[in-house]
Image 1 (tube, helix red, strand yellow):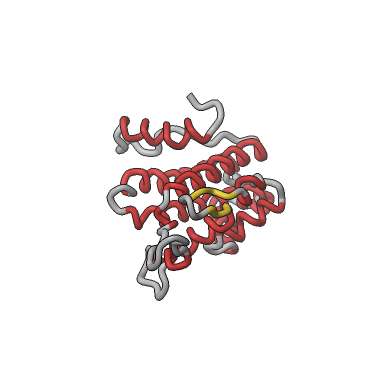
Image 2 (cartoon, rainbow, N blue to C red):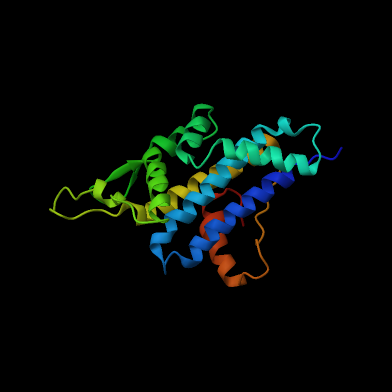
Length: 211
């Protein structure tokens, strides 16, 4: 009975996550309010990739079709709760404590932990779907000026944290499960120059030993 190889599963899921990161890279400057949506989707897929790899033994004695059903079940069990998934991996020592608990500067007035950034992304994911009664920025008023707020969901700090956590998890997946995750261009339809810019921004900056 032929079960789906772990490396195939991981690369399939990670490729989908990279598609989200690349989509944000291309359209984020045009439609900045969509950026948190794609960052959320990417992190959700990468977190679930680790969890699926961790539970690969559940696929034993299953054929390829059955394997896909088991994988889908594992992924669905965790819903869209990226903070909960990340905290679980933090407790297991998979995600570095500094990544989640260090404070990231959004501006001179605001410093936010990685855990709070995940909360912001979860709320932003909803905001990107439809109008909500209270926008996220209302939670971050200026300390100096009245009726001024900081739109933290559109900060470049969100980009940095998403790339950092994504790279950290992909690296852990490779090391923990002894598999290779492709860093090649994800589609022949992508312009070579655009992919090179993305590669430099994500892979070369956030991964070790990338040329």
